[in-house]
Length: 154
Image (cartoon, rainbow, N blue to C red):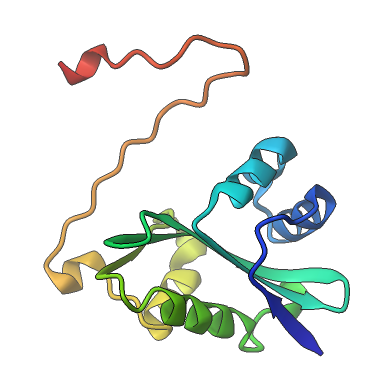
């Protein structure tokens, strides 16, 4: 039986197994950073089959005006069984008082199916809402490096 938890303190081994299973190696390269990121999230809902972490959604934001779905992932063996839909249903229930719920993903061919799934669970494409999306991707600094130079913002 699947149980759902609202708990941000998830063991790094469980996070590694889940993120690694779906191929998100950029996250598993630094498990301490991933664990801190999960713990610092505004909302974390995880799905468990007994003691196995099989799905997770995490939301960042201010809790009042914007909620950003940072991660939604389900182990491959559990995909296409409604688990992701249930995780998103629970998120939407928790953030129903917030005007903007945002999600962003890479626009690569392998994400086409997942992008369609996002629309099936209730998200709209930015252009369908008359919006434009913008992002800045910063180069990842190695540990103990100098902070980013923001001189280009002047």
